[in-house]
Image (cartoon, rainbow, N blue to C red; front, side):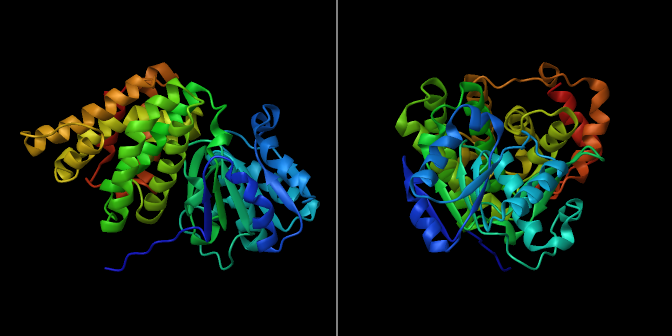
Length: 384
């Protein structure tokens, strides 16, 4: 079997890393940027921490901030028009997965105009050209969109999330600067952090996992378990913020190349049908889906338990595996994640529609245990 690993051309890490922007732009040889971000990051000055560096170094740019928390086909089309109108030749994405995913779709379509309908990008699209060069600066420690070959866009007409997988979309440069995350509120810190943990665990147990991806994912689990509670309780703790920023990137390096599983398959329709934040959906589902997957993961779950600080000495594989599930659930509760779908406005009558989309989701086939429509319905019912 041949395993593939795709990463950014260059990545920079550390508080204040955004200060390398001028040299990065000079190295790329580009003239004008379209800055893709969201209105909230503009309002609260987070985007300004980046654009002030562009201003100080006379780097021309225009801002596109029409990005929704769950970005849509319309957002992308508007962004493409903004890119052309600005006469830009590269992208700077500032934000969480929503901004970076929108920028990825913009960059792909600008250089591959045959996909201008956007919906034809779903799945593994046969694009021929690399995206417009992009510099991605994440402002959350969760999605790892800055280092993945995936992006998610909502098809408004069908009310479904399109998962797009394309090696041509990966940002050329990632700048992981924890200072951009200091103002993230507790609830969003928790949700995005649990999203990162879901990436790490699903990437560790997915069918495509192998020794290199395992190495990254188990370290990400260890780091998230250590740093997330501190980052939630003390948002300006530099060590915890930087630890989470690096951990979510490490998780993304691996899952981007090996795939995910049923948690993401079930979380995506919660976002498309009910606009539930992706990290919240993942965190709520993760322990229950882990229990479902346990029979197929008895070799790996004990390693997850140990990475989360559980002493498994004297435990059987089954006991250590249950300890991993319990540790994940305890962490979710500790950081304030809702534990029931009804808390999010989802009722029993919504389960069939959710389950249909989940079964068809591109992430579901990567699950380590085979799953049926009835299995998915039962899992949603279990967390109702």
